[in-house]
Image 1 (cartoon, rainbow, N blue to C red):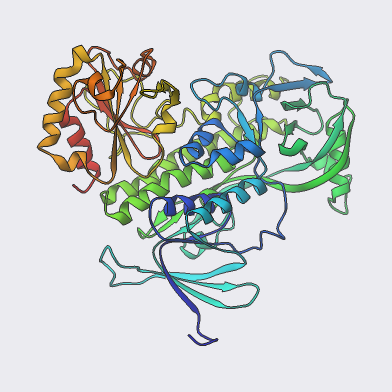
Image 2: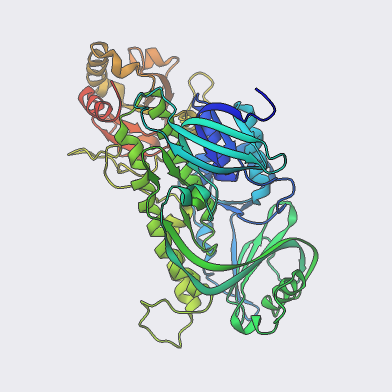
Length: 573
Protein backbone atom coordinates (compact mmCIF):
# COMPACT_ATOMS: atom_id res chain seq x y z
CA UNK A 1 0.00 0.00 0.00
CA UNK A 2 1.42 3.38 -1.00
CA UNK A 3 1.14 6.54 1.08
CA UNK A 4 -1.75 7.76 -1.08
CA UNK A 5 -3.79 4.57 -0.94
CA UNK A 6 -6.58 4.44 1.63
CA UNK A 7 -6.58 2.01 4.52
CA UNK A 8 -8.79 -0.94 3.59
CA UNK A 9 -10.27 -3.27 6.23
CA UNK A 10 -13.15 -5.73 6.58
CA UNK A 11 -15.41 -6.29 9.59
CA UNK A 12 -18.67 -8.05 10.31
CA UNK A 13 -20.15 -4.81 11.65
CA UNK A 14 -19.12 -1.16 11.34
CA UNK A 15 -20.51 1.24 13.93
CA UNK A 16 -20.52 4.99 13.36
CA UNK A 17 -20.45 6.89 16.65
CA UNK A 18 -18.29 6.26 19.71
CA UNK A 19 -20.67 7.46 22.41
CA UNK A 20 -22.01 5.02 25.01
CA UNK A 21 -24.53 3.41 22.66
CA UNK A 22 -21.99 2.83 19.89
CA UNK A 23 -19.38 1.54 22.33
CA UNK A 24 -21.86 -0.80 24.01
CA UNK A 25 -23.05 -2.19 20.69
CA UNK A 26 -19.49 -2.80 19.55
CA UNK A 27 -18.61 -4.47 22.86
CA UNK A 28 -21.51 -6.89 22.49
CA UNK A 29 -20.75 -7.73 18.87
CA UNK A 30 -17.17 -8.59 19.83
CA UNK A 31 -18.32 -10.46 22.95
CA UNK A 32 -20.52 -12.61 20.72
CA UNK A 33 -17.52 -13.64 18.62
CA UNK A 34 -17.56 -11.28 15.64
CA UNK A 35 -15.31 -8.56 14.24
CA UNK A 36 -16.37 -4.95 14.72
CA UNK A 37 -14.98 -1.47 14.26
CA UNK A 38 -16.44 1.61 15.94
CA UNK A 39 -15.48 5.03 14.59
CA UNK A 40 -15.95 8.32 16.45
CA UNK A 41 -15.87 11.69 14.70
CA UNK A 42 -14.54 13.67 17.66
CA UNK A 43 -11.46 13.51 19.83
CA UNK A 44 -12.88 12.39 23.16
CA UNK A 45 -9.94 13.91 25.02
CA UNK A 46 -10.96 17.42 23.95
CA UNK A 47 -14.75 17.01 23.90
CA UNK A 48 -16.80 18.09 26.93
CA UNK A 49 -15.24 16.36 29.91
CA UNK A 50 -18.43 15.98 31.92
CA UNK A 51 -22.12 16.58 31.43
CA UNK A 52 -24.67 14.94 29.20
CA UNK A 53 -26.46 11.78 30.39
CA UNK A 54 -26.21 10.89 34.07
CA UNK A 55 -28.91 8.45 35.24
CA UNK A 56 -28.91 4.68 34.75
CA UNK A 57 -32.19 3.09 35.82
CA UNK A 58 -32.70 -0.44 37.24
CA UNK A 59 -33.51 -2.30 34.01
CA UNK A 60 -30.53 -0.68 32.31
CA UNK A 61 -28.34 -1.75 35.23
CA UNK A 62 -29.64 -5.31 34.91
CA UNK A 63 -28.75 -5.33 31.22
CA UNK A 64 -25.25 -4.01 31.91
CA UNK A 65 -24.85 -6.55 34.71
CA UNK A 66 -25.72 -9.44 32.39
CA UNK A 67 -23.04 -8.17 30.01
CA UNK A 68 -20.39 -8.12 32.78
CA UNK A 69 -20.11 -4.33 32.66
CA UNK A 70 -21.64 -3.18 35.92
CA UNK A 71 -18.83 -3.56 38.48
CA UNK A 72 -16.63 -0.59 37.45
CA UNK A 73 -19.74 1.56 37.13
CA UNK A 74 -20.82 0.72 40.67
CA UNK A 75 -17.34 1.68 41.86
CA UNK A 76 -17.58 5.16 40.33
CA UNK A 77 -21.28 6.00 40.45
CA UNK A 78 -23.66 7.37 43.09
CA UNK A 79 -26.39 4.88 44.05
CA UNK A 80 -29.48 7.00 44.70
CA UNK A 81 -32.42 5.45 46.56
CA UNK A 82 -34.04 8.59 47.97
CA UNK A 83 -35.82 11.66 46.65
CA UNK A 84 -37.03 14.98 48.00
CA UNK A 85 -39.50 17.65 46.92
CA UNK A 86 -39.39 21.26 48.10
CA UNK A 87 -41.96 24.00 47.56
CA UNK A 88 -41.29 27.50 48.90
CA UNK A 89 -38.49 26.03 50.99
CA UNK A 90 -40.76 23.47 52.68
CA UNK A 91 -40.33 19.74 52.12
CA UNK A 92 -43.44 18.19 50.57
CA UNK A 93 -44.54 14.89 52.08
CA UNK A 94 -45.34 12.75 50.24
CA UNK A 95 -42.85 13.89 47.65
CA UNK A 96 -43.46 14.20 43.93
CA UNK A 97 -41.77 13.29 40.62
CA UNK A 98 -38.77 11.22 41.73
CA UNK A 99 -40.46 9.29 44.57
CA UNK A 100 -40.61 6.14 42.43
CA UNK A 101 -36.91 5.70 43.25
CA UNK A 102 -37.87 4.78 46.81
CA UNK A 103 -40.18 1.89 45.86
CA UNK A 104 -38.20 -0.24 43.40
CA UNK A 105 -38.89 -3.96 43.89
CA UNK A 106 -37.90 -7.36 42.45
CA UNK A 107 -34.39 -6.39 41.39
CA UNK A 108 -30.96 -6.32 42.97
CA UNK A 109 -30.61 -2.85 41.47
CA UNK A 110 -33.21 -1.10 43.60
CA UNK A 111 -31.68 2.31 42.95
CA UNK A 112 -30.72 4.76 40.22
CA UNK A 113 -27.00 4.84 39.48
CA UNK A 114 -25.90 8.41 38.78
CA UNK A 115 -22.75 8.42 36.67
CA UNK A 116 -21.75 11.13 34.25
CA UNK A 117 -21.37 10.08 30.65
CA UNK A 118 -17.64 10.75 30.56
CA UNK A 119 -17.07 7.99 33.12
CA UNK A 120 -19.51 5.62 31.42
CA UNK A 121 -17.71 6.04 28.10
CA UNK A 122 -14.30 5.57 29.71
CA UNK A 123 -15.43 2.26 31.23
CA UNK A 124 -16.94 1.08 27.95
CA UNK A 125 -13.77 1.95 26.00
CA UNK A 126 -11.72 -0.12 28.45
CA UNK A 127 -14.14 -3.03 28.09
CA UNK A 128 -14.08 -2.66 24.31
CA UNK A 129 -10.32 -3.12 24.29
CA UNK A 130 -10.66 -6.22 26.48
CA UNK A 131 -12.74 -8.01 23.82
CA UNK A 132 -10.45 -7.05 20.94
CA UNK A 133 -12.74 -4.63 19.11
CA UNK A 134 -11.25 -1.86 16.96
CA UNK A 135 -11.91 1.73 18.03
CA UNK A 136 -10.91 4.85 16.10
CA UNK A 137 -11.34 8.47 17.19
CA UNK A 138 -11.17 11.65 15.10
CA UNK A 139 -12.54 9.70 12.15
CA UNK A 140 -15.52 11.03 10.22
CA UNK A 141 -17.88 9.00 8.07
CA UNK A 142 -18.10 10.53 4.59
CA UNK A 143 -20.33 8.00 2.86
CA UNK A 144 -21.54 4.43 2.50
CA UNK A 145 -23.36 2.29 -0.01
CA UNK A 146 -24.77 -1.21 -0.29
CA UNK A 147 -23.35 -2.81 -3.38
CA UNK A 148 -25.39 -5.22 -5.50
CA UNK A 149 -24.42 -8.79 -6.25
CA UNK A 150 -23.63 -9.84 -2.68
CA UNK A 151 -26.42 -12.31 -1.93
CA UNK A 152 -24.21 -14.80 -0.05
CA UNK A 153 -24.36 -14.77 3.75
CA UNK A 154 -20.55 -14.65 3.72
CA UNK A 155 -20.47 -11.45 1.66
CA UNK A 156 -19.63 -7.93 2.87
CA UNK A 157 -21.92 -5.74 0.76
CA UNK A 158 -21.65 -2.52 2.79
CA UNK A 159 -18.84 -0.23 1.65
CA UNK A 160 -18.24 2.77 3.92
CA UNK A 161 -15.68 5.55 3.67
CA UNK A 162 -14.07 7.60 6.42
CA UNK A 163 -11.55 10.41 6.75
CA UNK A 164 -9.23 11.13 9.66
CA UNK A 165 -9.98 14.66 10.85
CA UNK A 166 -6.35 15.00 11.98
CA UNK A 167 -4.32 13.50 9.12
CA UNK A 168 -6.93 13.50 6.31
CA UNK A 169 -6.06 9.84 5.76
CA UNK A 170 -8.79 7.91 3.92
CA UNK A 171 -10.26 4.65 5.22
CA UNK A 172 -12.45 2.23 3.25
CA UNK A 173 -14.29 -0.44 5.22
CA UNK A 174 -16.34 -3.39 4.08
CA UNK A 175 -18.89 -4.96 6.37
CA UNK A 176 -22.06 -6.99 6.51
CA UNK A 177 -23.91 -4.30 8.43
CA UNK A 178 -23.50 -0.66 9.39
CA UNK A 179 -24.99 0.83 12.57
CA UNK A 180 -25.59 4.53 13.08
CA UNK A 181 -25.10 5.45 16.73
CA UNK A 182 -23.90 8.93 15.84
CA UNK A 183 -26.34 11.13 17.75
CA UNK A 184 -29.27 13.39 16.98
CA UNK A 185 -27.56 14.91 13.93
CA UNK A 186 -26.76 11.43 12.63
CA UNK A 187 -24.88 11.32 9.33
CA UNK A 188 -25.90 7.69 8.89
CA UNK A 189 -29.59 8.53 9.19
CA UNK A 190 -29.35 11.45 6.78
CA UNK A 191 -27.20 9.59 4.25
CA UNK A 192 -29.62 6.65 4.32
CA UNK A 193 -32.49 9.05 3.60
CA UNK A 194 -34.47 8.16 6.71
CA UNK A 195 -36.84 10.99 7.77
CA UNK A 196 -36.53 12.30 11.33
CA UNK A 197 -40.11 13.06 12.29
CA UNK A 198 -41.27 15.30 15.11
CA UNK A 199 -40.94 18.89 16.19
CA UNK A 200 -39.05 21.32 18.36
CA UNK A 201 -40.77 23.48 20.96
CA UNK A 202 -40.00 27.02 22.09
CA UNK A 203 -39.02 25.81 25.54
CA UNK A 204 -35.37 25.83 26.61
CA UNK A 205 -33.65 24.28 29.60
CA UNK A 206 -30.27 24.74 31.22
CA UNK A 207 -28.30 21.99 32.93
CA UNK A 208 -25.21 22.83 34.98
CA UNK A 209 -22.86 20.50 36.90
CA UNK A 210 -20.29 21.26 39.55
CA UNK A 211 -19.34 21.22 43.20
CA UNK A 212 -22.11 23.00 45.06
CA UNK A 213 -22.52 24.23 48.63
CA UNK A 214 -26.05 24.78 49.93
CA UNK A 215 -28.10 25.15 53.08
CA UNK A 216 -30.86 22.95 51.63
CA UNK A 217 -31.41 20.32 54.36
CA UNK A 218 -31.43 17.18 52.16
CA UNK A 219 -28.59 17.42 49.68
CA UNK A 220 -27.78 13.92 48.41
CA UNK A 221 -31.20 12.85 47.16
CA UNK A 222 -32.80 13.27 43.73
CA UNK A 223 -34.70 16.51 44.16
CA UNK A 224 -37.60 18.39 42.60
CA UNK A 225 -37.62 22.07 43.58
CA UNK A 226 -40.98 23.56 42.59
CA UNK A 227 -40.22 27.05 41.35
CA UNK A 228 -42.69 29.60 40.00
CA UNK A 229 -40.02 31.19 37.79
CA UNK A 230 -37.66 28.37 36.74
CA UNK A 231 -39.99 25.41 36.28
CA UNK A 232 -39.63 22.15 38.17
CA UNK A 233 -35.97 22.47 39.10
CA UNK A 234 -33.84 19.33 39.04
CA UNK A 235 -31.39 18.74 41.88
CA UNK A 236 -29.36 15.62 41.07
CA UNK A 237 -26.51 14.25 43.21
CA UNK A 238 -23.72 13.18 40.86
CA UNK A 239 -20.66 10.98 41.10
CA UNK A 240 -17.54 12.24 42.89
CA UNK A 241 -19.52 14.57 45.16
CA UNK A 242 -20.80 16.81 42.36
CA UNK A 243 -24.35 18.04 41.77
CA UNK A 244 -26.46 18.91 38.72
CA UNK A 245 -29.02 21.72 38.74
CA UNK A 246 -31.47 21.89 35.86
CA UNK A 247 -34.08 24.56 35.24
CA UNK A 248 -36.32 26.12 32.60
CA UNK A 249 -34.74 29.04 30.76
CA UNK A 250 -38.01 30.85 30.10
CA UNK A 251 -38.53 33.81 27.72
CA UNK A 252 -38.83 36.04 30.79
CA UNK A 253 -35.40 34.94 32.02
CA UNK A 254 -33.90 35.13 28.53
CA UNK A 255 -35.09 38.74 28.20
CA UNK A 256 -32.73 39.67 31.02
CA UNK A 257 -29.74 38.62 28.92
CA UNK A 258 -29.95 40.14 25.42
CA UNK A 259 -26.28 39.33 24.81
CA UNK A 260 -26.91 35.62 25.27
CA UNK A 261 -26.12 32.95 27.83
CA UNK A 262 -22.68 32.52 29.35
CA UNK A 263 -21.41 30.32 32.16
CA UNK A 264 -21.84 33.28 34.49
CA UNK A 265 -25.50 33.57 33.47
CA UNK A 266 -26.05 29.81 33.86
CA UNK A 267 -24.61 29.92 37.39
CA UNK A 268 -26.54 33.04 38.38
CA UNK A 269 -29.90 31.63 37.27
CA UNK A 270 -29.13 28.26 38.86
CA UNK A 271 -28.68 30.08 42.16
CA UNK A 272 -31.93 31.99 41.58
CA UNK A 273 -33.81 28.79 40.72
CA UNK A 274 -32.99 27.29 44.11
CA UNK A 275 -34.52 30.12 46.15
CA UNK A 276 -35.18 30.34 49.07
CA UNK A 277 -32.16 28.08 49.60
CA UNK A 278 -28.67 29.53 49.32
CA UNK A 279 -26.41 27.93 46.73
CA UNK A 280 -22.75 28.51 45.90
CA UNK A 281 -20.74 26.90 43.08
CA UNK A 282 -17.14 26.27 44.12
CA UNK A 283 -16.46 24.51 40.80
CA UNK A 284 -18.31 24.44 37.47
CA UNK A 285 -17.64 21.30 35.45
CA UNK A 286 -20.07 21.65 32.55
CA UNK A 287 -23.21 23.45 31.45
CA UNK A 288 -25.52 23.51 28.46
CA UNK A 289 -28.55 25.35 27.10
CA UNK A 290 -30.78 23.34 24.81
CA UNK A 291 -34.18 23.44 23.14
CA UNK A 292 -36.83 20.87 24.03
CA UNK A 293 -38.20 18.67 21.26
CA UNK A 294 -39.13 15.12 20.38
CA UNK A 295 -38.15 13.37 17.17
CA UNK A 296 -38.16 9.78 15.98
CA UNK A 297 -36.74 8.16 12.85
CA UNK A 298 -39.43 6.92 10.49
CA UNK A 299 -37.54 3.63 10.30
CA UNK A 300 -34.93 2.20 12.65
CA UNK A 301 -33.50 0.12 9.81
CA UNK A 302 -33.44 0.19 6.04
CA UNK A 303 -32.30 -2.03 3.19
CA UNK A 304 -31.75 -4.88 5.69
CA UNK A 305 -28.18 -3.65 6.26
CA UNK A 306 -28.44 -0.23 7.91
CA UNK A 307 -29.56 0.20 11.53
CA UNK A 308 -30.03 3.19 13.82
CA UNK A 309 -29.92 3.23 17.60
CA UNK A 310 -29.75 5.77 20.41
CA UNK A 311 -30.13 9.46 19.57
CA UNK A 312 -29.65 8.68 15.88
CA UNK A 313 -33.07 7.01 16.05
CA UNK A 314 -34.86 9.24 18.56
CA UNK A 315 -34.38 12.39 20.64
CA UNK A 316 -36.40 13.82 23.51
CA UNK A 317 -36.01 16.01 26.57
CA UNK A 318 -34.00 15.05 29.64
CA UNK A 319 -37.10 15.53 31.80
CA UNK A 320 -37.42 11.86 32.73
CA UNK A 321 -33.68 11.17 32.27
CA UNK A 322 -34.48 8.38 29.80
CA UNK A 323 -32.22 9.26 26.86
CA UNK A 324 -29.19 7.09 27.58
CA UNK A 325 -31.35 4.34 29.07
CA UNK A 326 -33.43 4.16 25.90
CA UNK A 327 -30.28 4.05 23.78
CA UNK A 328 -28.87 1.20 25.87
CA UNK A 329 -32.14 -0.70 25.47
CA UNK A 330 -31.80 -0.20 21.69
CA UNK A 331 -28.26 -1.53 21.77
CA UNK A 332 -29.04 -4.60 23.87
CA UNK A 333 -32.03 -5.41 21.66
CA UNK A 334 -30.04 -5.04 18.44
CA UNK A 335 -26.61 -6.53 19.14
CA UNK A 336 -27.55 -10.15 19.79
CA UNK A 337 -29.93 -10.15 16.82
CA UNK A 338 -27.18 -8.89 14.51
CA UNK A 339 -24.71 -11.43 15.88
CA UNK A 340 -27.17 -14.33 15.61
CA UNK A 341 -27.98 -13.40 12.02
CA UNK A 342 -24.30 -13.19 11.06
CA UNK A 343 -23.55 -16.52 12.76
CA UNK A 344 -26.45 -18.04 10.84
CA UNK A 345 -28.24 -19.07 14.04
CA UNK A 346 -31.56 -17.29 13.58
CA UNK A 347 -34.12 -16.72 10.87
CA UNK A 348 -34.10 -13.30 9.14
CA UNK A 349 -37.41 -12.39 10.78
CA UNK A 350 -35.66 -12.24 14.16
CA UNK A 351 -33.43 -9.33 13.13
CA UNK A 352 -36.46 -7.56 11.68
CA UNK A 353 -38.04 -7.43 15.15
CA UNK A 354 -35.44 -4.88 16.27
CA UNK A 355 -37.12 -2.01 14.44
CA UNK A 356 -40.67 -2.96 15.40
CA UNK A 357 -39.94 -3.69 19.07
CA UNK A 358 -37.83 -0.65 19.76
CA UNK A 359 -39.95 1.81 17.80
CA UNK A 360 -43.01 0.69 19.78
CA UNK A 361 -41.22 1.40 23.07
CA UNK A 362 -39.79 4.73 21.89
CA UNK A 363 -43.19 5.96 20.67
CA UNK A 364 -44.50 5.50 24.23
CA UNK A 365 -41.55 7.47 25.57
CA UNK A 366 -42.03 10.30 23.05
CA UNK A 367 -45.69 10.76 24.04
CA UNK A 368 -44.80 10.60 27.73
CA UNK A 369 -41.94 13.05 27.29
CA UNK A 370 -44.14 15.63 25.56
CA UNK A 371 -46.38 15.78 28.61
CA UNK A 372 -43.73 15.91 31.30
CA UNK A 373 -41.54 18.45 29.49
CA UNK A 374 -44.50 20.85 29.34
CA UNK A 375 -45.48 20.25 32.96
CA UNK A 376 -41.89 20.71 34.12
CA UNK A 377 -41.93 24.11 32.42
CA UNK A 378 -45.13 24.91 34.36
CA UNK A 379 -47.36 24.55 31.29
CA UNK A 380 -50.41 22.40 30.59
CA UNK A 381 -50.46 19.69 27.87
CA UNK A 382 -53.11 20.15 25.17
CA UNK A 383 -55.19 17.26 26.54
CA UNK A 384 -55.63 18.89 29.96
CA UNK A 385 -59.21 20.11 30.51
CA UNK A 386 -59.13 20.64 34.27
CA UNK A 387 -58.84 23.79 36.32
CA UNK A 388 -56.29 26.07 34.61
CA UNK A 389 -55.49 27.60 37.99
CA UNK A 390 -54.43 24.21 39.37
CA UNK A 391 -50.80 23.34 40.06
CA UNK A 392 -49.15 21.60 37.05
CA UNK A 393 -46.57 20.09 39.39
CA UNK A 394 -49.26 18.01 41.10
CA UNK A 395 -50.23 16.49 37.74
CA UNK A 396 -46.54 16.01 36.93
CA UNK A 397 -46.10 14.01 40.12
CA UNK A 398 -49.13 11.86 39.30
CA UNK A 399 -47.83 11.10 35.80
CA UNK A 400 -44.41 10.11 37.15
CA UNK A 401 -46.04 7.85 39.73
CA UNK A 402 -48.25 6.17 37.12
CA UNK A 403 -45.23 5.65 34.86
CA UNK A 404 -42.98 4.24 37.59
CA UNK A 405 -42.47 0.85 35.90
CA UNK A 406 -41.68 2.62 32.64
CA UNK A 407 -39.25 5.02 34.33
CA UNK A 408 -37.34 2.20 36.01
CA UNK A 409 -37.43 0.21 32.77
CA UNK A 410 -38.61 -2.87 34.65
CA UNK A 411 -42.06 -2.69 33.06
CA UNK A 412 -40.98 -2.13 29.45
CA UNK A 413 -42.31 -4.95 27.30
CA UNK A 414 -42.89 -5.92 23.69
CA UNK A 415 -45.97 -7.36 21.94
CA UNK A 416 -46.37 -10.84 20.50
CA UNK A 417 -44.10 -11.64 17.56
CA UNK A 418 -41.78 -14.41 16.40
CA UNK A 419 -39.72 -14.05 19.60
CA UNK A 420 -42.55 -13.44 22.06
CA UNK A 421 -44.86 -16.43 21.71
CA UNK A 422 -47.93 -16.69 23.92
CA UNK A 423 -48.86 -20.33 24.60
CA UNK A 424 -52.53 -21.31 24.48
CA UNK A 425 -52.70 -22.20 28.17
CA UNK A 426 -50.11 -21.50 30.84
CA UNK A 427 -49.82 -20.58 34.50
CA UNK A 428 -46.86 -18.28 33.84
CA UNK A 429 -46.99 -15.03 35.78
CA UNK A 430 -44.58 -13.33 33.39
CA UNK A 431 -45.91 -12.82 29.89
CA UNK A 432 -43.64 -13.23 26.86
CA UNK A 433 -41.97 -9.94 25.94
CA UNK A 434 -41.48 -8.96 29.60
CA UNK A 435 -38.22 -9.10 31.56
CA UNK A 436 -37.31 -12.31 33.31
CA UNK A 437 -37.36 -11.57 37.04
CA UNK A 438 -34.07 -11.86 38.88
CA UNK A 439 -34.36 -14.28 41.82
CA UNK A 440 -32.00 -15.83 44.36
CA UNK A 441 -30.92 -19.43 43.82
CA UNK A 442 -28.50 -21.69 45.69
CA UNK A 443 -25.24 -23.13 44.35
CA UNK A 444 -24.94 -26.90 44.92
CA UNK A 445 -22.34 -28.00 47.42
CA UNK A 446 -21.33 -24.67 48.92
CA UNK A 447 -24.97 -23.60 49.37
CA UNK A 448 -24.09 -20.02 48.47
CA UNK A 449 -26.81 -17.69 47.21
CA UNK A 450 -26.47 -16.56 43.61
CA UNK A 451 -28.76 -14.36 41.56
CA UNK A 452 -30.43 -15.81 38.49
CA UNK A 453 -29.03 -12.96 36.36
CA UNK A 454 -25.52 -13.84 37.52
CA UNK A 455 -26.03 -17.28 35.99
CA UNK A 456 -28.05 -16.44 32.88
CA UNK A 457 -25.59 -13.93 31.43
CA UNK A 458 -26.17 -12.30 28.07
CA UNK A 459 -24.00 -14.51 25.87
CA UNK A 460 -26.05 -13.97 22.74
CA UNK A 461 -27.85 -17.28 23.37
CA UNK A 462 -31.33 -18.37 24.38
CA UNK A 463 -31.63 -19.78 27.88
CA UNK A 464 -33.93 -22.79 28.21
CA UNK A 465 -34.86 -23.04 31.88
CA UNK A 466 -36.26 -26.31 33.21
CA UNK A 467 -38.15 -25.62 36.44
CA UNK A 468 -38.05 -29.11 37.94
CA UNK A 469 -40.35 -28.42 40.89
CA UNK A 470 -40.72 -31.30 43.36
CA UNK A 471 -38.84 -34.17 41.77
CA UNK A 472 -41.07 -36.93 43.14
CA UNK A 473 -43.97 -35.36 41.22
CA UNK A 474 -42.19 -34.16 38.08
CA UNK A 475 -39.75 -37.02 37.41
CA UNK A 476 -41.97 -38.63 34.73
CA UNK A 477 -42.09 -35.33 32.80
CA UNK A 478 -38.34 -34.81 33.19
CA UNK A 479 -37.58 -38.30 31.93
CA UNK A 480 -39.96 -37.84 28.99
CA UNK A 481 -38.19 -34.58 28.09
CA UNK A 482 -34.80 -36.30 28.23
CA UNK A 483 -36.02 -39.03 25.88
CA UNK A 484 -37.51 -36.42 23.53
CA UNK A 485 -34.19 -34.58 23.35
CA UNK A 486 -32.14 -37.73 22.80
CA UNK A 487 -34.06 -38.24 19.58
CA UNK A 488 -33.68 -34.55 18.64
CA UNK A 489 -30.16 -33.61 19.61
CA UNK A 490 -30.24 -30.47 17.45
CA UNK A 491 -32.56 -28.92 20.04
CA UNK A 492 -30.29 -29.64 22.99
CA UNK A 493 -26.92 -28.92 21.42
CA UNK A 494 -27.70 -25.94 19.19
CA UNK A 495 -24.94 -23.29 19.55
CA UNK A 496 -27.56 -20.57 20.09
CA UNK A 497 -28.96 -22.21 23.24
CA UNK A 498 -27.90 -22.87 26.82
CA UNK A 499 -29.78 -24.98 29.35
CA UNK A 500 -30.38 -24.58 33.05
CA UNK A 501 -32.23 -26.68 35.63
CA UNK A 502 -33.83 -25.12 38.72
CA UNK A 503 -34.88 -27.67 41.34
CA UNK A 504 -37.06 -27.06 44.39
CA UNK A 505 -35.38 -30.07 45.99
CA UNK A 506 -31.75 -29.89 47.10
CA UNK A 507 -29.20 -32.60 47.71
CA UNK A 508 -25.54 -33.55 47.74
CA UNK A 509 -25.35 -33.60 43.95
CA UNK A 510 -27.63 -32.41 41.14
CA UNK A 511 -27.57 -35.87 39.53
CA UNK A 512 -28.78 -37.63 42.66
CA UNK A 513 -31.27 -34.88 43.48
CA UNK A 514 -32.92 -35.22 40.08
CA UNK A 515 -32.37 -38.96 39.76
CA UNK A 516 -31.03 -38.34 36.26
CA UNK A 517 -28.60 -36.13 34.37
CA UNK A 518 -29.72 -32.49 34.66
CA UNK A 519 -30.38 -30.19 31.71
CA UNK A 520 -27.31 -27.97 31.79
CA UNK A 521 -26.15 -26.73 35.18
CA UNK A 522 -28.43 -27.08 38.20
CA UNK A 523 -29.27 -24.61 40.95
CA UNK A 524 -31.58 -25.09 43.90
CA UNK A 525 -34.69 -23.04 44.63
CA UNK A 526 -34.80 -24.00 48.30
CA UNK A 527 -37.57 -21.62 49.35
CA UNK A 528 -39.56 -22.15 46.15
CA UNK A 529 -39.59 -18.42 45.46
CA UNK A 530 -38.27 -18.70 41.90
CA UNK A 531 -41.03 -21.15 40.98
CA UNK A 532 -43.60 -18.91 42.64
CA UNK A 533 -42.50 -15.70 40.92
CA UNK A 534 -42.57 -17.38 37.51
CA UNK A 535 -45.93 -19.03 38.21
CA UNK A 536 -44.60 -22.60 38.12
CA UNK A 537 -46.59 -25.22 40.06
CA UNK A 538 -44.13 -27.26 42.16
CA UNK A 539 -46.04 -30.47 41.46
CA UNK A 540 -45.99 -29.94 37.69
CA UNK A 541 -42.82 -28.00 36.88
CA UNK A 542 -42.40 -26.00 33.71
CA UNK A 543 -40.25 -24.62 30.91
CA UNK A 544 -39.34 -20.95 30.40
CA UNK A 545 -37.34 -19.88 27.36
CA UNK A 546 -35.51 -16.59 27.86
CA UNK A 547 -34.21 -14.47 25.03
CA UNK A 548 -30.53 -13.44 25.03
CA UNK A 549 -31.55 -9.93 26.13
CA UNK A 550 -33.21 -11.25 29.28
CA UNK A 551 -36.86 -11.20 28.17
CA UNK A 552 -39.24 -14.13 28.37
CA UNK A 553 -39.77 -15.71 24.95
CA UNK A 554 -42.33 -18.33 25.90
CA UNK A 555 -43.12 -20.88 28.57
CA UNK A 556 -45.37 -23.72 29.59
CA UNK A 557 -45.36 -27.33 30.71
CA UNK A 558 -42.32 -29.62 30.65
CA UNK A 559 -42.91 -30.74 27.09
CA UNK A 560 -40.34 -31.18 24.36
CA UNK A 561 -42.86 -30.10 21.74
CA UNK A 562 -43.08 -26.62 23.31
CA UNK A 563 -39.31 -26.20 23.04
CA UNK A 564 -39.23 -27.60 19.52
CA UNK A 565 -42.01 -25.32 18.29
CA UNK A 566 -40.29 -22.21 19.65
CA UNK A 567 -36.81 -23.06 18.41
CA UNK A 568 -38.03 -24.16 14.98
CA UNK A 569 -39.76 -20.80 14.63
CA UNK A 570 -36.75 -18.76 15.70
CA UNK A 571 -33.62 -20.73 14.82
CA UNK A 572 -32.16 -22.36 11.74
CA UNK A 573 -32.27 -25.98 12.87
